[in-house]
Image 1 (cartoon, rainbow, N blue to C red):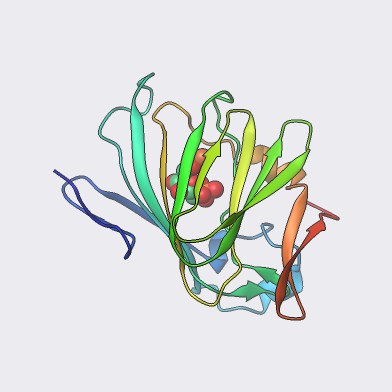
Image 2 (cartoon, rainbow, N blue to C red):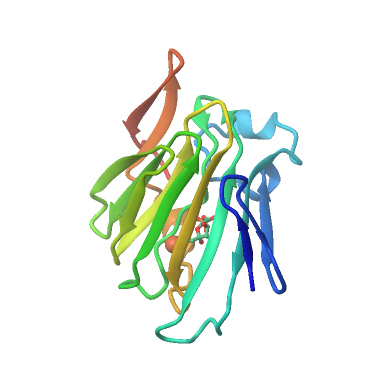
Length: 183
Ligand SMILES: O=P(O)(O)OC[C@H]1O[C@](O)(CO)[C@@H](O)[C@@H]1O
Ligand SMILES: [Fe+2]
């Protein structure tokens, strides 16, 4: 059995998987390359813990995980996840925030973007065929839980090549959405 630290963003139990993304892992994710280069490459940006009770190719199975995005910026841009479409495009996902404040960026396959505010208790349904990225716009860690189809997979390449439609930058201390100028 797994045990969740719901507000702390941790999963305890056998077989829990963990990954962390540092500044060095996120080249070309942030727009300001000079600012990225000037940062300590070991700075933690986000970490994920998740459980895969079933095989990755099991149609009909579900995975469960939690992501903690640290507060911070690269230049004017807030710390955020890499973002992805699902490799199996029609697979959906739920996110729910439990701590912190942020923005869920969504983009369909014709690059039409929309966004949802994340605050403790907000629930977000991400339909299939929709790229998703989470941005921490606050001063504290942003913690959100996720449930997704075990056979969804991740397509990071499309976002790496083409970018998201919008970025979230700090403008006079407040988050502001701006159209992307480059991937
Ligand atoms: O996979 P990315 O874009 O780095 O974002 C991390 C989040 O997305 C997930 O892949 C779920 O879609 C989780 O592992 C985690 O919650
Ligand atoms: Fe996903």
